[in-house]
Length: 137
Image (tube, rainbow, N blue to C red; front, side, top):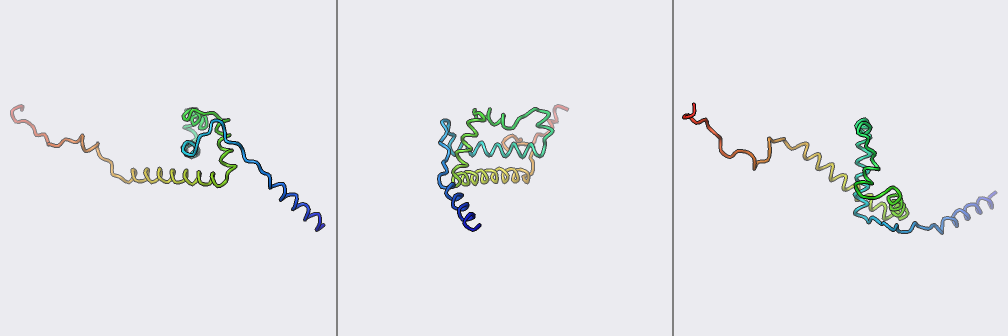
């Protein structure tokens, strides 16, 4: 029994040695574009989770929206995603940048929510108060 277990473990470890990574896609996005796409995908998924009825009523398909926005398709996206996920360190670095971008967006929204609303930009506010002309009464 012990020999069988030892052989099984050795075969299992030997099988893990020759893992081939996926090749770089012909239409490779690069880090910046992949970060943008992943950020938008997470935002769409979160929006859809909180308000599915609106997405259903408007017939918005999150992935199709992303593909149109970035002028890509599902196969090219899958190839790029596979490329990154096969390179664990690179993928984790990419996802850390996505997380940072999401935090910046959250902080920007929070800051805008805390800022008191004004009637308009200061440059559009009248600088002189208008008084009623006594001759036009």
